Image (tube, rainbow over all chains, first blue to last red; front, side, top):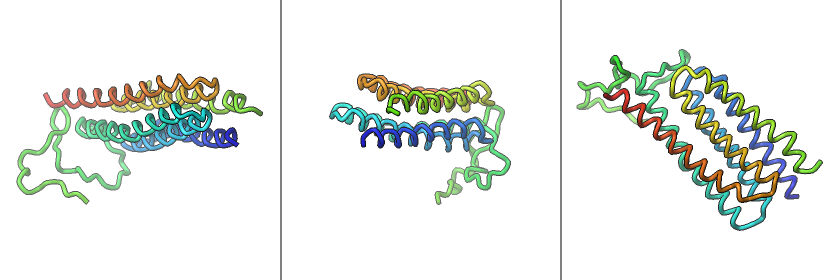
Length: 129
Length: 90
């Protein structure tokens, strides 16, 4: 029973990591690549660690697996947010079929990348919705 | 078919093919940020490989290395984005 559960979960996890790698290779844009890889790779690694917790029915291994899953779920979105913000400030070009860019107009291009506009600090803050 | 054979012939080849595909993006990547997320994904796939190997060989000690890898990946991405931001600000 444990072997069957381990086989099913590890197959789903390995396939999720494979889809993440295909996505990072084939997506047309940096931001699409970022959004594909972060979610799928976290899912895949989490499922493989659950397999490890099933296989070794031991308290220390289960605690370790839960700690790694918790740490990944906590830190991966933070890292993705930071690198996405850096990419937008650096001026990475956006895919031509992108429908909406909510930060458009709040930063202006200069020679070293995008910089925050100085003149509309008063009432023109970015709307959150 | 035992679980060890299944891991040897299915799980490990899938993970290794994923690492090869990410390496292509790490080599091609048009900007620096593409390479940074490719490196991050390679380390995450490395955590998955270590976990699979520890299941297959029955040695749970290897999970400690996976935990350290998760720490290193986060710190690396944060440091890269911090210094890239600093480079354009000056």
